[in-house]
Amino acid sequence: MKMQYGTKGFKEGFDRTPVGIGRHLVKVSRVFTETKSGEEIISRNGHKMIKVVLEVLSGASAGRTIWDQLVLLGKNDKGAGITKHKMKVIGVPYNEKTQEFDIDTDIWPDLNPFYIDVIHQDYNGALSSKIDAYIRESDAKPNGFGPKEEEVLEDYTGESADKEVEL
Image 1 (spheres, rainbow, N blue to C red):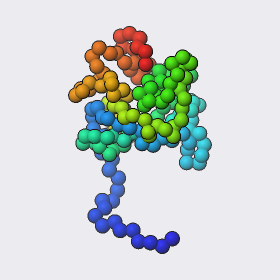
Image 2 (image 1 turned 180 degrees about the vertical axis):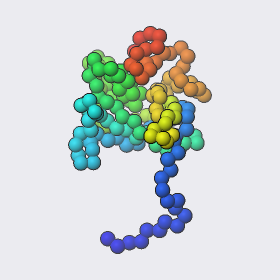
Image 3 (image 1 turned 120 degrees about the vertical axis):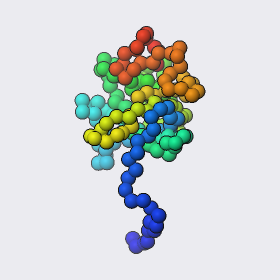
């Protein structure tokens, strides 16, 4: 193929500015379940893993993306409740009776937006964004950081801070 590609006014390089600290309305923009070579993505511990790219929809970070992963753990594995919570917030169809998700990652970009709370952390000497919490839109404080005061959500250890919460 022969062609010209104009780059006048382009800034060369990558913008590594992290997504801002705080609450952000996001949606799933892309989902990866396979490596570039077509192999299933597997965690270091041998569990299936789904990687998601979340796009920030509003505010100063609008248009920016942040990556996350959902590790499909067994019910007795530490952190299994995290994946269950994330998938419910994303809007993955869930059968309450069988307590099973119907996973079709092709539809995830079409599901409703939700909120994430972002913090910053040092990663190999550079500042990076980290998702601290997934929050259903209905559970988010209008102008706050964190869940509604009357609710207690599981933290990322999979343990409830005060009491058991149905997620």
